[in-house]
Image (tube, rainbow, N blue to C red):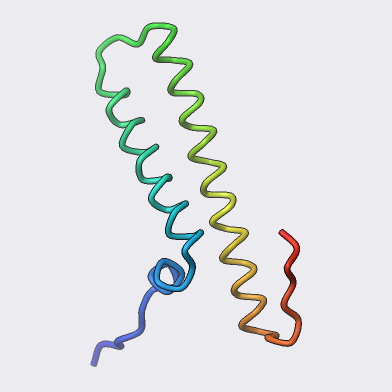
Length: 85
């Protein structure tokens, strides 16, 4: 019988507005990168945009991981909630 457990990412998307916002930004950056990569020729401006998008996408992912780690810590020890970012 299959378990009805939700994936941790789904729980985070539902529980944390910042995580949701970052996930949406990450998705938008990914879509933009896909659009750029479909071009048969990338000029200097496109290459710079690609680099910028990759960095912003990675920043989103890093922040999403920090949020996930914070929430996991809070679930393990609810008395030790930290407000430091």
